[in-house]
Structure formats: C-alpha cells, structure tokens
Image (cartoon, rainbow, N blue to C red; front, top):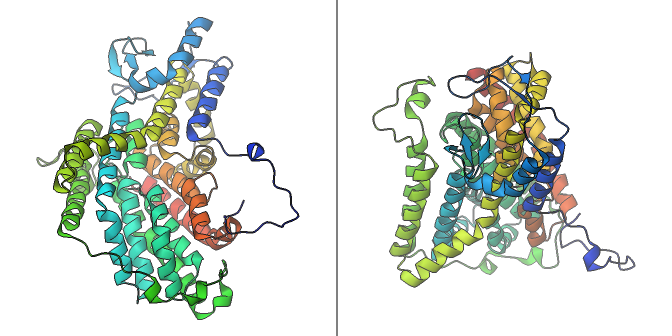
Length: 510
C-alpha cells in the first residue's frame, strides 16, 4: 500500500472501483466479533470463579457450571446486545445482564455520554479557530530555528494527544507544516514524522486521554487517575526519544538532501520562508479560549488523580480532603458546561452554539457506538457464563510467570487486537473485562494492565494502514507508505523495547 504521491506504471490496469478491498470499519469488525463470540458460546463450556467481597474472581476457585440458557435465550442476548451494551443492568443474585432487570448498571451509558460530551467540547473549541491559529503561530515563530520548530510542534501535538487523544485533527496541519519544513531545507518525511509521530506518541503514552485511558480504566473498574505517574514518566521519556529521532533525521537530510527517504517533488527545493505565509495574529478572544481550554484539562487532571496514593505510593492511602475522585458522570457534566462556556466566551450566540454542540456530539457518535457494541460482546459472554472460562484458559498460560513478564505479555497479546480494532475505545471495552481480573491473579496493578494495553494500541497506530491518521497523513504529505515504513521502523523497535521496560518496571514497582 502506498501514499497518493506514488505513481503506478501506465501499463498496469486498475481494478474496478467496486472491487478494491477496503479494511472494514471498527463498527463492522465488532459486529463480526459479536456474531463470532455468540457462536463460540455454544462450544465453550460455562464456568465460574468464586468472588470476593469486592466482586473480583478468586484465583484457584474456577469450576464448571451448568447453563440454563435455551437457544431462544441466547438469540435474545444477541438481539439485545447493543441495548445491553448501553444500559444493561446486572442482577446481583444471578449475575445476568438485561435491560429490564434490577441491580447495578453493567452497560456503558456513562462512558457513552462522556464521549459525546467531550466531542461537543472539542468541536466548539475548534470552531473558534483558536487552537489552529495558536499552533500556526507557534510554527511560524520558530520558522528560522528548524530543530526547535520540530521539537515545539511535536511537543504540542504530543501534549494534546496525551490529554485528549489528538490524532485525526492533525490532518488539517499538513498544508501549514510542509511548506515550513521545505523552506528550512528539510523534506516531506520530516513534516510527516513531526505530525504523525508527534501526536501518536502522545496517544501511546496517554495520561488522561478519555478515549484510551478513560474508557480502559472504566472497563477495568479503576479510577482514570490510577497509574498516572508511570504514564507521565513514559510520556516524558518516549516523547523525548521520538523528537530526537525526527530531529536527527531532519539534520541528516538538511546536510545531505540525497539521504532523503521520501525524495523531493518538483518545486520542493525552491521553497523559501516567504512562501510559508504568516498566519494571522492571535486575538484576545483566541487567547481567552486557549487559556480556558488549558484550565479545563488541568482541572480534569486534578479531579481524577488519587493524590494521596500518587504522592505516598500507597494504593490504600486515605484520600486527602481536597481530592475530588471524579469519574465519568462528573467529567461528562464538566465538558458539557465547558463547551457552553467556550461558546459564550467566543460570542457564538445561542443558535450557533447549540448547532455546534449538537454537531460535535454527532461527530463522535461513531466511537461512542463502538464502545456500546464492544460492551455488548461482554454481555453475551457474561450471560452465557463463558467469561470466566476464557479467563481461566489465559490464567493457565501466564500462571507462574513473574509480574514483569506478565506486563510484557499484556503488551504483546494486544498488538494483533489493535490491528483488527484500531478504535482504542472499542479495543479497550472488549479486552479489559478479561485482562483486568487476570492482573489480580498475577498480583499486578490493574493500572499497569491499562498502561500496557494503551501502549500496544498506540504503538500499532503509529504505522498500521488501518488508521486514517497514518494512511491519510502520508497521502496528504505525498509520501509513499512504504517509504514511511522505512523511516519509522527503527523508532518502532526502540519504542517497543522502552515500553516493555516501563510496563515491566511498573508491574514490579506497584
């Protein structure tokens, strides 16, 4: 597979448009997974662990049980799986999940609303033009200092990636970054690496990214702030390594253009600083919006971090009086209020603000539905009573391994899943109900499992062709996909080693 810039031989006949293979969307993949799991539930024997007072499975207590589900019951579970995935309720006595039962909420309604709320907030922020113009001003201000420009843009993208999953939004910056990089004597690969790897490494090391860490933490039944110290250290180190890698390549190409992996298109070598047009100045309104955005994300981090545990290192430490301990209901309300506040500051007016909030929620309905479908799969497994059987089979594989080796295993086992389900939200909702209890057996913090999982998802999304960020980015930059792979694979190897080291250290440390 290649980017749009690569020219195919004229003699080669193009296949008809309708016969080209396109990798299915995350929604389609999850529908197939739902059907496959439903069918496999007829073959996998039901079983159960004894549960402790907190509802966690007790290691060594797995036993086979009888299933009282008829074929009609199973068919009903398949039919209602999306509904149960949204607001299914788990009966405290039987453990069965259904929309009309009494008990605790098992569905992902809280996370679903949270995704729509943050979608509305992000859309309102982008509608003000403040974030785009702020990044544009930064890039232009550093236009005469190449290495600093690369580092500055990558650092901003990485910061946005780690706190709010900034990824697809980067596609709008190629038209700005490419002329600047060419004017400084670099090639298109430098611009590509700056954008894709800058945001991608932030998502890989998500600290409070709601679409990765948030969804995974919810599925693992832990706080969004659990494990934030390890993830923050990972973010600092891996971001520095990635920036150094891109800067090193950029300096090499600037010194010897013949070593460029992407080559140069006609006109690329004639770029100069004058052609990289200066973006308009930031207005007072733009500055106010940027400050407000920083305050909202800063407050979100403050509200979810278990400060007593983070500062003392004791997971059971008594919470400080100032700790809020917020979760998804409060965070959903925070971002809805913040979306309105940004719109008021930007003087949108009632009609435009209402329309933008609705449009933002609509734009994020796809990842929200992915979460619902993935949760529906776990409902089918739960009602068929095969979840513990699957957990028991994996327990046998990792039994006796050290905590460090277990953490590395979690990273490795999630790599193929990340390829099939590039949606971080769907991948997390599907995998965490199995991986989180497995961590308890291995004596490893569930937060480490979340970190290992999101690192696997983020690492894969730096290069797999199933993500719009990567394949769309190389197309916009007019860089061949195969050339991008040649550029990025040494970094991928280094990152994989560092990730394994961090998660192993985190497993031992916690």
